[in-house]
Image 1 (cartoon, rainbow, N blue to C red):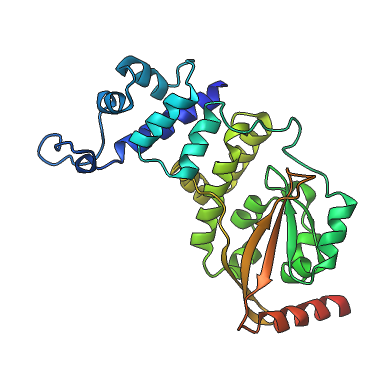
Image 2: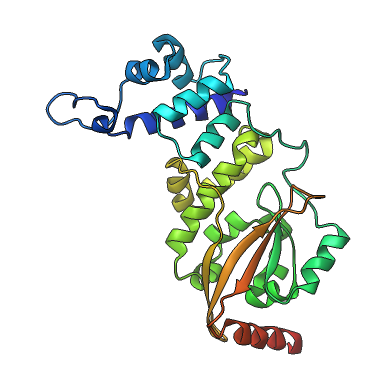
Length: 279
């Protein structure tokens, strides 16, 4: 476990420990008003580990944390499945990242052919959330994707720095937070790598909103959900967002925006595509 991952693990556990309700663990308040937060020795006792060892874990010391012990600590801290997976990844017990897989120049031809065959917006996301490829429908929805500099063609970067994309998202506050939480969940094994550190620093320097959200250390697994876009030319578009992972290229995730039944989205998307073709 590298130093940055050890620090992140310690801070993450500390944040979750201090946010717990004492009553839910059968513990009395501390003093007259403090009802939140467990002491380190209380977590250690519930997890059946020594206080010294747990203290070192929160301090980011270079110690060996087994999967079983981290799972036990996670149960005490009442971590969600996504948070537990994140803790295990930070502790070196998650899936090993593929060397050199942080960024990808493009998608393989057979996957690009799949994207091109689909009539609804689809784009391919690399491990660093760089947008490696897209189809005509996605470009019709978000025209800037074709002209933005390659170095800035990153989903998080665009969400936090592109005013046009921000205006297209009526629920930007929720969407941006979800993206950061999902990115953190997926970045666990890569935390501390040079590309990951550089990307987070670049985002934090460019956007105080990103820096603030990143500091909250919220972790969420991806879930299919509704996405709404406001397109100046045709109005509101409502999609169901899904994600598929190709079995032969697992480092690429295909994000799909499927028009929601019962809305005029499919017809309006067709208008956008026709307009883009004519233009």
